[in-house]
Image (tube, rainbow, N blue to C red; front, side, top):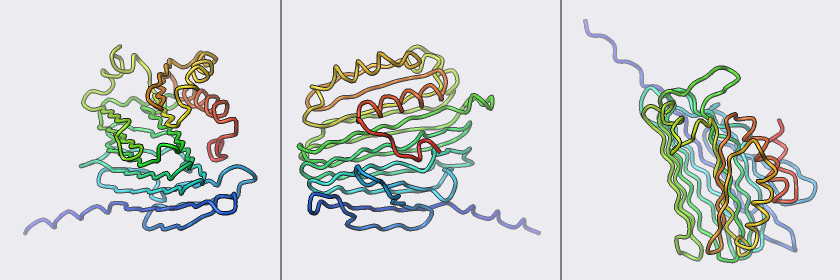
Length: 274
């Protein structure tokens, strides 16, 4: 008697597409589409640009999951996008989860892409890709952070797979390309000076705007007030990139909160405090 075939595990799928337009000096919702395990929430805000909070109702990512987000901010419009909580990347039996994000900014538009941390568990696997098409007069702030296990729970990420790619184009020309890859013996890699030098959490921020180079000194001054972060910033050709590491995830989060509040001169989305 032949063994019954093993059931095929179900995989989560989700799509969110959101568009904004400027009208009468205000930013208004143009369109909203959502399907599967991905939702786009629009919380009520009092002052400031509208916010989009992306929610993964599947509770996290594992091998085979597929999520796609697209945000379009029209000419003169402004918006902020974040996630409801940290994105948890659980152990994958096979394959890798995938998150693809597309951002589009029109003339004079502003978008702050501020997802909360990506939390990688031992054996987790994720491929993440960010693609941006923006006008040369637009203003984009991107902040993406990764945490390797929860130190408070005594977790160690010994193995797994993580990749992140950024492709940012201004007026059709590639201006910033980023690639991050972790794999194999991640715990040993984490300890090497050429990689994370013992850090358990790291983040990359990019500010792409006409005034990016002029604000470099401001960014460095803010970083100088954050002793728990190992960080540096550089700027060229209308863009600034900031990289930071921390021994503990709480130090990274606190440092990012301070930097973002000061740099943006406004509070971060409320879900960051929940």
